[in-house]
Image (spheres, helix red, strand yellow):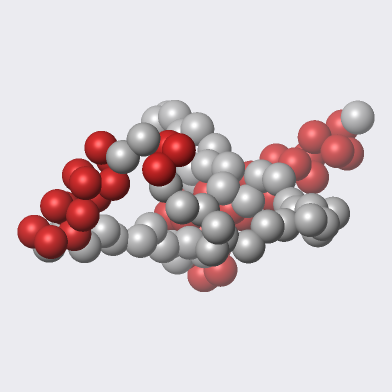
Length: 93
């Protein structure tokens, strides 16, 4: 999953945000925001980002070369490693 890059605000946008932040909550018109009556299809955890910790890991050369075939990028390697660890923990229970 790629991280989105932020564009710098224009001077007008920055001024508008400053003006909005100075408004009291009671003065902000929220009448045009549609209400959500049914939240049964809401999902939790979609914005969860796991904590990363740096570790030194020594892998056998054949393991590393084999992993490059199906997971050439670090994120793909982490995902496949996590999947393998979850399967291993499920089997050991």
